[in-house]
Image 1 (cartoon, rainbow, N blue to C red):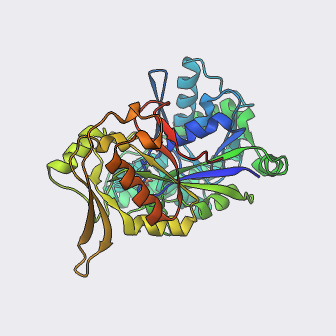
Image 2: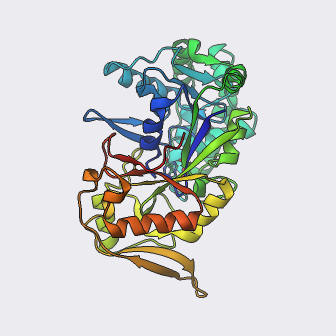
Length: 407
Ligand code: IMP
């Protein structure tokens, strides 16, 4: 079946939303399988900027059915406001176009509150993601199906008790959300989302049997995977190709596996970053690439590409293709460096590529890109042992070179 999966190969924010948006043109289904409103996919359509945190980018294509899978944690307030925002600009978001897994977990006001109190060490997005996954494992989580059936009061009570006690013990008299208010809000959300919530297993099995074109949209990136990333500076879900199957619970033979690589590295939040640039070069990348979090607005840490890390991510996920984004940010920057291996003393050994200064959006084919840019891309392709699929040369929906049609 023509199932394609798109995964960020770095620390998130690689520009996956744009790649998924382009590919969704040909898709019947676009599916998210993990994470929550900690993700932020920025897409530009007709001069309008959309930031989608939960809803798959396929919502902007009329023919696509969009699915939020069981491995996700869903802040229903955030979801409802995203749905309202899309409706306000004429996008239809009915239950025929947006399906929510009944086994996905709900991020409650308690999760957000405790994350904001204690997520600082990791530098979380404060969206309640970790606490929601922790409560799922503690067996006091609330699933979307419980919301639909108004069968969640007991577990909400358990959450209020647990997080209230934690907040009191660790943070003194930090105020916690009012139980009755949270209960009412969730009941109202359950009524509004009622018709969207379903058992996704038969839906996905049918999609596989009917050979539908399904696109699976990763959130965050390989290095933020809870099991295989730079623990403890990671998110709370599995962000890899292997993790997608866990989140879906239905086997999908992903024929095309696209690793998305930003032309340089960024990271938000704390944790190791061997190629980070602290001086003016880092600032230049941040300003030129507008590297501020789509979800939190935090400045992203910036640095050069890290090939040892990327080789590992590509090998783990058996990516068949590489999509390179934000190439235009490198234009006019001066010589470009790529870390190729770690020296014995822990520092990085870099390879340098010539500077280029051209409007990349003017290039209509790979051959029209500046020669040093082509060299850099071919180098990446050979190092990562994956075929160059797409190149993003500017922020617009059309600023993409399709080097090899990946479907
Ligand atoms: P959490 O997912 O909010 O718990 O945050 C854990 C770590 O993952 C923090 O370092 C966040 O900055 C990072 N993170 C979570 N989601 C994203 C994302 O979509 N892009 C980049 N970093 C993210």
